[in-house]
Image 1 (spheres, one colour):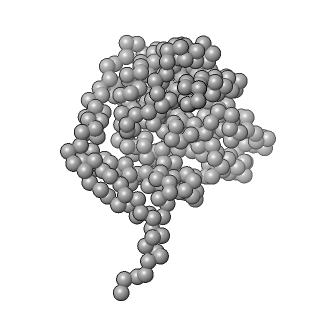
Image 2: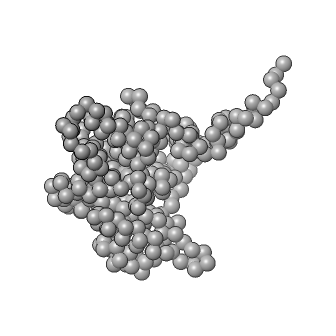
Length: 328
């Protein structure tokens, strides 16, 4: 689910901020770990450490690289952290003897995290990890359902990211997984305003109309999210599909300010037309999962973009050197 959705938050931020708006990105992770600091890199990828010392999800690294704004400990929260906060409050007597429950106490803690500290921003984009229907994600889904009702009308929208798989034997893209995902979400009280449909090829118009009909969204709100050559093409790809206009229209912002995509176009052009190539070896213990070194990989690619060269990475397992005889 991480690789399916990570680019969406970054791309959404890219085109919204490109219109002059101040944007904050926040990640809500449903796992019970207090933070990813003790999680295996082979399962979860790297631990991204923020400037204020927080051990957070690697997605915050993407957010920071796209926004140019340093991520902080208040941009990421987990179920484990939420329960720890609640138990600490209960032990202190903050709840005055009340029975502590998922609703309202857990959901209130989630809502407080989402809405606090946002006075300096025009938009707050919250990404919930996992998949619709996951047991551990239920309190988060319930919290954002409540939040949609509590905020002033037109101050919150729901963007649902789904996968539309291609079945080679049938020779077609299948809409059923998206239909069932949306039905599950609707049963939980959330009606998506926009569908962001991941696919590896163009979605035919009949399939888009079908999704619009069965998922109860406007045809213009069915946005195809196709594979792109690199993550920095995502803002321009979404702009081409009309996602930015759809998001701003849902908030009643019409006509929308014209986007400034010059910087994204320059980065994309440098990646497509390098003037040279350099090979760099990375020696590591967790080379089986490249996400364990995500920030290092992106830093090297950024250096390549700045110097107009293509960076080719060679991965070397550190155990190779551990088994060799030491040099005399």
